[in-house]
Length: 639
Image (cartoon, rainbow, N blue to C red; front, side):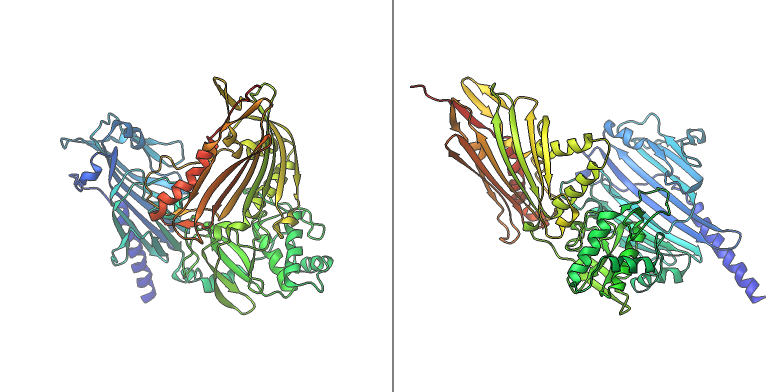
């Protein structure tokens, strides 16, 4: 009898908690916070943005469900903003089962309220999803709506609050009933209000989203992430200590451990150092196997010993795991997160979609990246630099923490040598260019070139070479060759080299009287700039530290001499930290009938604080200034 009563009470509580979100409604009389003076002239201001997620997981008649409520209000200050906000769809994430409620109204500047009729709330193109369109919206109106949908439960979720308009007030509520358990990870802007039986977070005055170059855009977004599990015990399995133990139990699809042992034997790794063993293994795997594309059907035709077939990401993980165990090389499985996306939580694995799993070899202080076909065993992948990785040593059965280093700028170099010769008509030019890349850029270009070279359609390969040669000018590719294309060159950082010969399609020169201006600056290619960004809201974050070194040799046409070249001489150095500074320096020499230009550009760090933005900006813009510069020629004096 006690058990029956307990089950009845539990079912009753589950129903009551689920009904709470489904009975949500707005205030009959709209009441909004006062808009601050600094926002009154903005095109739109979001008055509030409230969201509530309730997950019900139970084995009785109420089953599994997720309910979500969104309540939103925006003040339209400029007519140009109407189209951004006047159409609303309840949801489009393919998990929705039903739209339980949908209401919308327009509040006029004089206080009049116009509630949209039920007939104006219609089915969208997506099954079970409703949508509305506000009609007759004018400048000064407030648009307000809320909807409640029923969805299939998901293991995690994300709510982004930051938009291109300020948000005066934001709320996020997370509740659950039955056996469900949940946890919230909110941006620092949010305050945890600790309401009983609710995760309730609020934030005020969320500033508009700023789209800045070289910024951790996603990581910097004001957002809320949350986890949902079927039981409180399941939440415990997401703790790093438990998660890794379960992770290593998965089995590969394409092979077994005995096949991997035979492969190790065939590779003849006896009497080799740890570095040599892993390098040979890594090169074999990266050079022989292709990766399944997302959604591609699996085919049981992998031949590990022959190096043929396709593998899933999980298969790569286990191929390395079995091999490292066979070779008795101590290793740690590590979880990494792209620093532009977020940071790993210290306690648990949160969003599986954001995390990469790799291997760390403590003996050599090097990394293996099973899921990155362009990354060799060695330095960390560029997106994981300056991050904290969570690891697990399966031999010692202990968790570890690895602090991933920043790789110096001299690892990733772009060196170019260009010879520029004008045509007889002094209009077009032929450019012979040697492009040499090492480090992260070299790895990516080597992989991309190989991939495109294997396609039947060669246009993409031609476009790639043209873009690398002269991406700011329309050119005809006359010829090209490559050097050091094999994957093995990644291990010793041998440069990937493209030798190209192109001919400009459009004029490369301009005439002004008897003077001839030659656009030599364009030879370095298209350069992005920060001309329009005068202020900075976020720190500057680069993919990797790198260097650019260029040499341009211009053959002076017969009958001409140099009049001036001062625009091509630039010297900009950041005043910050000698070990982290960035700089741009170009020099010009005239030797016999040639103009020889040298350019050195360095970015020694991957992060610069926004406080030194103006110093960074002057260096960053220097390359764009150079790309617009010309050398001026004049006819030689006749004797």
